[in-house]
Structure formats: C-alpha cells, structure tokens
Image 1 (cartoon, rainbow, N blue to C red):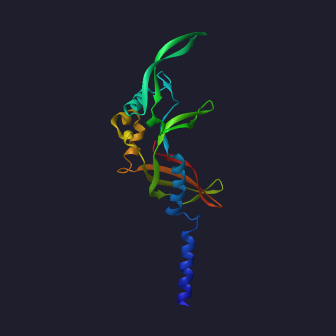
Image 2 (cartoon, helix red, strand yellow):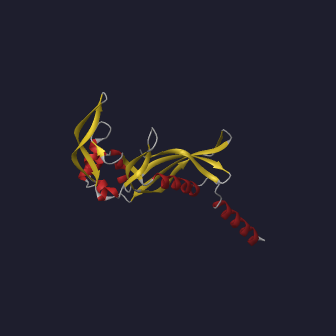
Image 3 (cartoon, rainbow, N blue to C red):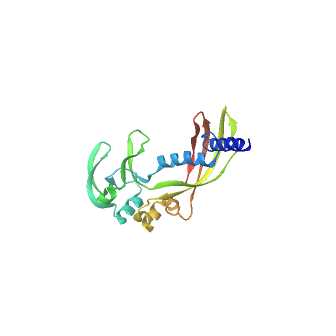
Amino acid sequence: MFLKLLLIAAVALMAGCSDPKAATEKNFKVVIQKTLDKAYPRCYITGDFPAVSDMMRNESELKALVSAGLASVKDEPHEVKDWGKARTVIRPTYNLTEEGKKFYKADANKAIMGGTKGGICFGKAAVKDIKEFTEPSSAGGVQMTQVKYTYEVSDVPAWAKSAEILTAVPRLKQDVESEKTPVDGMDVMVLTNNGWVSRGGSMGF
C-alpha cells in the first residue's frame, strides 16, 4: 500500500513538473527563450546601403563601420532638388564590403511610412536566470504574472567589440559584456489553455 501511494505521488509530481500551465521557472524560461529567439540576431545599426552622409543618417555609426572593415566610403555625385530645381552635389557615400554584407539584413526593420529598412544584425541570446516572478493574479479575467530574468548574448563578432564601434553604438555595450554581466529583462505573461505566453516586456535597451 505504501509503495502504491509513493508511486502515485511520484506520478503526480512528474505531471506537475511537465504541466505548461504551472507557474515555474522552467516554463517561464521556455517562453522567454522563444522571445529572445525572435529578437536575435539583433540589428544594432539600421538603415539602407549605399548610405549617403546627410542629416538622415548617424555618420558616426557609418564611420565606425568603415573602421571595422564592414563599409567603404568615397565621394560620389548625387542629384538633389531645391525648390523644384535639380542640382548635383558631392557627398560621402558608404557601401558595404563583402564582410559587411555577411551581417546585413535587408528587411531588418519596418519603416514608419511603410516598407522596410536594412540593418547590421548579429548575436544569439539565451536565458541565464529567472530572478523572480510575481504570484499569478487575475486581471481582466486572465491570470497574469511579471517575470524578471537575465540573459547572455553570444556569437558577437570581434569587430563589434572595438572601441570605435562601442563608442558609436553604445547600446551594444551591454550585450558585448553580457558574459560577465548578464542583461536584465522583464516579461509580462498570460496563462492560456495551452500554457503561459508572453504579453510583452523589455529586454536590455
């Protein structure tokens, strides 16, 4: 009889551990990892190429790409219109090198006015720890919890760790240093009939 009760308890425990609806660190890690997999590779520098030096682009980022060997620059003629009249101006124009093309994603971001913009993207993120989560509570007829966690970023190319790049793209620093200092993140999760799902949150910058 004792063995039977012990077996039943063990089965119940195993079922609880595998229940996707349970509020456990294991379940939350699975959901957060899916979110990170969608966010990475992350696009740290956005914009199409060739890129023309003007007020619409951050030239410090473009110059940093040149120093990293991802882009080249030369003066090229461009036609502009002033009050309906066309004229030609010479402006620094940045083109991706073969190395730069390895990290370029043409549809990295959706543009505000429609269409897409390219970006320099890389990295892979993985959940490190679940720091804490709130006791699930009812809000608007659904069970919700707020989960705080940390994550690390790998597959960061050597050029992204250069002083020129980190100065031009300061938001990159926390991902580069995440192996020593994991990045903080937060996610609000909602319980569904299939288990916990992300409602949205914040990670790093």
